[in-house]
Length: 219
Image (cartoon, rainbow, N blue to C red; front, side, top):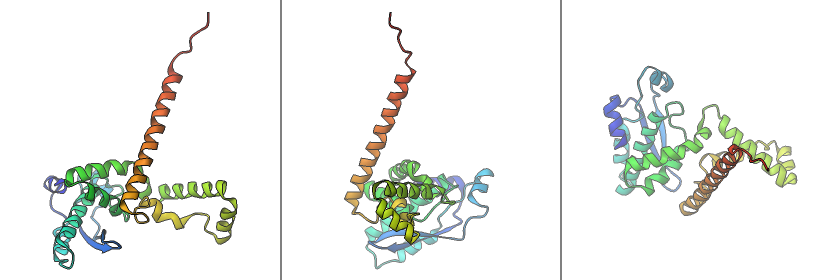
């Protein structure tokens, strides 16, 4: 697996990741004993902390009240998120990532492909998991502005309640409605979003190409 390769490259695990079953059986993770030095310092020193120990697999294996298939998916989720924490030490693992990664665990049977898809996906939403919350606050500000433009009366009400920062939508934005919608509907929504983003990118490239062509003189 991806994590196995990383363990051989960087050494033994030093941090415990405990999986916790929540909601519809979706695995959630909890970090115990953060690595020392901090991930950013470790990378600067040419080291990479491992964000999983054998305790994680022992805890999952001991959860005999869960079907073996569920325990297998949970362990795969631990593997992929642990690998991503090493890949992106600045953010590491943040709550909510497991909701996103679980989708690719279900769609892809191979950890390596699941990790590759999740890592590519995270490039577009990584800012939502910044520790200073600058990314997610910017997204919520956009939502607030959209409400103000489309429904002034509702926005006025939110202002009177002190809720115009739209913090009530925090989880919806972070996990991209993963907990609010069934998996099939979430995938449809995500694919529409990806297609729209791609369309806008192509239109922008076309506009740049047109502007770069020198205008012809009329004789």
